[in-house]
Image 1 (cartoon, rainbow, N blue to C red):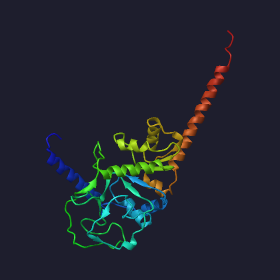
Image 2: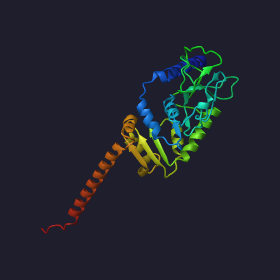
Image 3: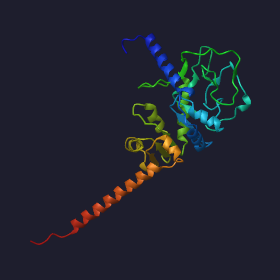
Image 4: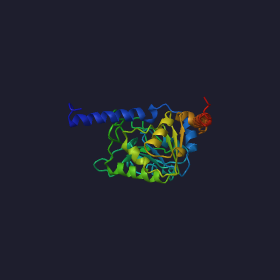
Length: 287
């Protein structure tokens, strides 16, 4: 990147930001409403969701389930003064969503703003993100052709969390994780290059149950045990994708097969040791 000056690098960042938003807005995603509805029913009012995703799938599902509301559900931000909507539809959030990498409906604070601005509708179509809010605008919105000015942590190798908003999000995530008795990780690969992941894992208390839903769950469980010192017995490694896990009714079918295979190998090892000991105990034959 040495051939680019600082202004060109800023333009490149804006372009990356534009395509992140463009391809992750709700109308750009192929969604299975039935699976999302099932997942929302799995969530309990005392839960906290921490995500690195930019899209709005989780909040839309929890909004429909009456568990999350945009006015307090992100633990930050405010609505635009340009909006009017049916405030009677808002309710107190039961399940907060902490989005550590930002969101496609968050705008970075401007010169006169002191907080992140939360969008409630699509930037081009003006369709509401959260059904039933009855959104209207005091000032007519102009459709955007380029999406930038959003509050996003870019998907780079070395991520920095320097603004007060990012720091507060990390603090909220650490506080939530430290109080959890059960932690579910869905589809997350635990990349070694992400220093924040290791920092968040350090907040997990020793008796917490960790459930990993991932196609590489067995390898991730071994990594957590061998490299980070987690007790292997506290980890449930469900080696399947999220869709199959939800469709099964949140059963640990792959984990049960894993335990069966593990027990078989342990029994086989015990049997082999007994045979070896039996042969060793025999006295040598006289010559």
